[in-house]
Length: 323
Image (cartoon, rainbow, N blue to C red):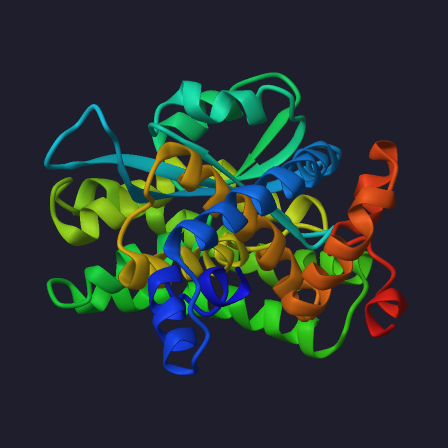
């Protein structure tokens, strides 16, 4: 399981390797083991869902996954893994949905209140419009748009990129100085806010000076449209300037797709989401996924259901993993 979901080694490739070592395991046996393991761990995944919804700050992103569907002969269904990252708790939770519409993230986000940081996908804006939600945009996405405009309008794109670079310099100063959240907020207000005000004034002046469909025009209008959300990270030192932590957590899914290509069923896709939740959270907390999984398998049956959360990677007693 760890080899498949962390090291991206498909089960059939693992079985071939074992066979070369003289250990022959029928594929049906391996598949049965995988099903039993998923059934055993699924209540723990549900416990993780409950824990992450207690956060008041979530970063969200989604990525496609090909899924075999018996109703679609000769092709695969394009489903989606939706990722929910709570930076303060250092936990990432994935779930599989068959689509990418508002209804597919509604089961999670309709229960959430607090800061919601996403890209510009319209579905997220519908949730950000609810009472109790404060929307945050992503400066990394804004920067990428100006990067794309460098070839066609280097002068203006360079001005914007230079100012955004100064914002990230403030973030590096806070990180390198190991500042508290309150001190990071004060540093941002002192050094980042003047830069943001300068950039905002510059952007306002470019609306009538750029073509809406040109790369620089698109970059300018993207930033102007999301301007309130782009400034929102200044409200609280706990908040991040961009959504990169969520994107980093979702990147292993893209790496895995290159090896296992598709999920064998919708249930298998949900299992992939479950393991990415567990092992992604292990990574965020510097935990060896094998050590964590071994301990959980040895102890989950003796753990009361109302204590399952104590087995989650971001909450588990690290001393227990050394035993």
